[in-house]
Image (cartoon, rainbow, N blue to C red; front, side, top):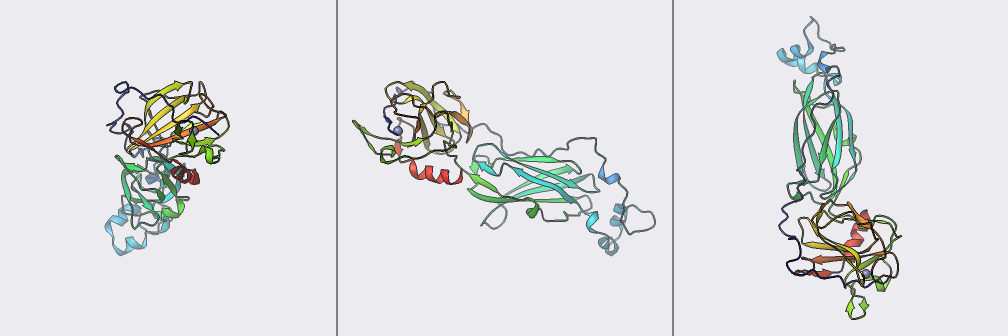
Length: 330
Ligand SMILES: [Zn+2]
């Protein structure tokens, strides 16, 4: 698919909203949300201590407090906290994108347990991230949202297993390792492919550096059906939105969050653009749709990556190697 590519309107110096020093997307750090939910459940601690072998009418916990060896013998499976629910969704976590929500429920005779959640990267020794979630009510589900970052430091890309540990007021730990219960690992990715639906990279004409009349093609063309969603490969700031009839058509420029890249999206469908200059977007957020506006011979996304600010000190680089990587896991 041919397009003019590099003919975008160059914003006049000073006409552009400052694009630097964004200081973050304003998204909060990962926060535990494991506050007690639903106050109507029966406190687990009030249940009869069925199965306990102690005699004499002492409560189970009382006996544990006062005896040593006998108490340890009593620490049967049913007396320890049990992980009743442990799930994650989605299992792909995009940097600065939608957080992964980990849902868990712990059943125990104690009304509260102390919970720690750790994220262990495949191939790394030990947990890279550990969150002490404090006291969590037993018998009800809780949710923890993980952004895959601490402050502005992104978690390294890869597969993360997550492990939950809990301890009740008697010091009893979870019956089972939750690593197995956690199921599928979370895949952490720093970018999203900009056209998630069916697409192709076309032939030599579509490549970065392909000859055009009077200049070279400054991006990679991605052919897809008109109306296919175009999403942000990376969170960041929309620094430019404009229309150029003789070239780029409807187009956008995005400055990537916490990186040096600017991304340019051209020939977007008329009326499809969902963001404005100055908007902050998340990774994977839809920006518009594939179209063929401007100088274009058919529906496609003309996609550029600039190292540095677009037309303000940066320079275009070949997007294809990065696109191919993103495409492989999208
Ligand atoms: Zn192009």
